[in-house]
Each structure stands twice: as C-alpha cells, then as structure tokens.
Length: 453
Image 1: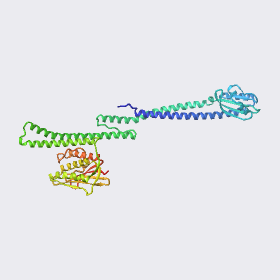
Image 2: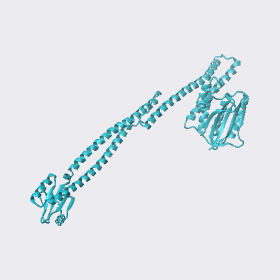
Image 3: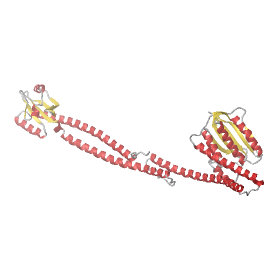
Image 4: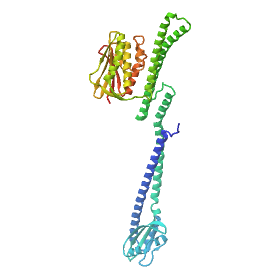
C-alpha cells in the first residue's frame, strides 16, 4: 500500500524554518528584555540627575518655572513639596506620587527613588529635599521614559523577522538542492525496477547522498551481470533439456511407426532410458538449486562422524570406480572426526563431488575421498582426482552455475553444470564453505569445510 509521505526537501525546509523561527523568538525575547532593562535603568538614572538639578535650582520662583518648562519638554512632570501641606503640582499624577511616609521622609531630608503605579499608570518617581524643609518631586511615565527603547524594540523585531524570512528562503533552496540528487537516484531506481539496465546516476551532493548514487550504480552493474549469467544459464539448460528430449522423441516416433526392427527394440529402449535418466538428473539438480534458494530449506543437525560417513560412501563409490578401471582411495584418520551437521546433506555433497570426479577421471587415474580436522573447530571433507584438473582462472568460478560447463563443453565430459553450484550452496547452508584447487594426484581438488559446533 503506497502512502503519501512528505518530501525530504519539504521536511528539511520545514525544519530550517522551525529552527529559524524558534531562534528568532528566543533572540527577540532576549533582546526585548535587555532593551527594556537597559532603557529602564537609563531612564531612572536620567530622572535622578534631573531631580538633583531641579532641587539645586528650586530656590527662586523664576528658576522653578524654567525648570518646569525644561522638564515638560522631556515629558517629566514637576511638583513642589512645601514644608507643610500636600504636593503642589499641575498634574494629578505628581500630586498622588508620594505616600504620606515618603512625604515625611523627604521633609526629613531623605531622597526618594521609586518605580510604582500611580493612578493606574506605571511611573518613575524621584523626590529630593530642598532647603527650608520642603522638596521637589519629578514623575515620568514608563511609556514616556522608554519611548526610544520601544522604537529600538520594533526595529529589532523587524530585523529578526527579516532574518527569519531570509533563513526560510535559504533553507528551502538548500533543501531542494540537497534533495535533487536523491530524486534523481530514486528515478534511476524506479527505472531499474521497470527493467532498464542502462541507468547510471552521477554521484553529487553530500557524501551520504553520493554513496546512495554509487550504490544504485553498483546495483545496476550487478543486475546486468546477473541477468546476463541467467540468460546464459537458461540457454545452456534449454540446450541440455532439448538434447535428451529430441532423442527420446525420435526413438519414440520410430517405435510408434514400426521403423525399429524387433532385434533393435531393446537397444532403442536403452537409449531412451539413458536419455530419460539424464533428463531426470538435470531436473533434479534444478529442483535442488531452487530449494537451496528458498528460505524454508530444511537442515536437521545431529552429531555426525565424518569418518563413518566417508567409509559408508567409500563402499559404494569404490565399486563404481572399479567398474570403469579407476583406483578409489579412502584417506581417514583412525579416530572419529565429529561435528554437528546434517548427515544427509553432507552425503549429498560427497556424492556430488565424487560424481563430478568420476565423470572427468580417465581409467587408471585415482580418485581420493578424505576426511580430517582442518583446524581447531573446523573439519573438512575432500575429493581429489587424477583428471584433467582446472586452470588457475577456473578456481574462482568453479562453483558458479554452468560456468565450467560452458568453458569445457565439447572439450571433456561435462554434467548438467549445476552439481558444483549445489555443493557450494549446501556447504553455505550448513555454515561452512567450499573451495576448489589443484590436487596432488594431478587433477582437481574440492574441499568442503564445516564447523564442528
């Protein structure tokens, strides 16, 4: 079921925008707090200096009027506190600025500095004593004191918004640029799935994205090689199937039409039987390969003595080798070679290797079956022959399906081309490995190593 998912570019862009917004909010809050604190401290300091100056110039009515005009220009309210009675001021804000206790403190010669709420409005209050037992009172609203700071805050917020917008645009562009190579790689993968094999992706972008492109290119090359091998294999199998079928069909038609003399009927039947057996072997090998590729291939481990297994196989193959003049030898140690594996599968490996050796070994040459402890924790079973052997370049491909069959068809006796592939896969399913090499007897050596546990 295909689910619609957001694109990588959209997610990266959204992440970048979210980071920019969160960063902008934090920066804005921090900037507003710092500006307000700094502006408040500066306003109080300035108002305190103005209060000191007003107190010093409050000796005459003319100086007091000049002070009031000067302070009014900067939105500071002025009031006089006489030696007795309430505060004398034009503005109600000033008249209500001091509490009775504060009034008494000023008349007692103490200065007052406060930030409070007066008549529902936040304000800074500065009061200074003057000669004669009175004083001066200066009041400035918070809004008037921090007007310049408000403008600075607005400019700062505008700058932050512009920065967030620029970050969002840049994040979107970068996300699209990063996602473009991945999109091309995805298109190439879809093309591979659709059957195209001429697909290549130019690695670009970050290292991880380039690695994905390289992986797709490697996959395309591997698929091309694999399908070429499969085509060759199918052509080879088709040829091998057609040959016995042609012989069986030809003899069957001759028998059906009465073209085979009575004294040759047995010979025709023998040819048909041999070709049928050959066809059955090929089909059996194909089925074995298919089972080995399946996930439900069964392996039944048990305690197995490879010496006992090799001796049992040797009794059978010694007779078969003797019938065609081949010297069969069994090389096993006196003590058991034990491992935990599937005895039936190991016997299948041994029979497959001996069948292959018997096919290529000429009369008078030897075939050797050996079992031994290869290394601590590893046992081995080995088949060597005195046949034509393998070239060095054959060793690496000896277990590939039909590869040796393709190389030596028409040169020497060959089987279905699947026997060694089955041996290799059986060994792998048993947790071991198969290796091809040169035998001391002059031919080929095939060694299967298995873990003891």
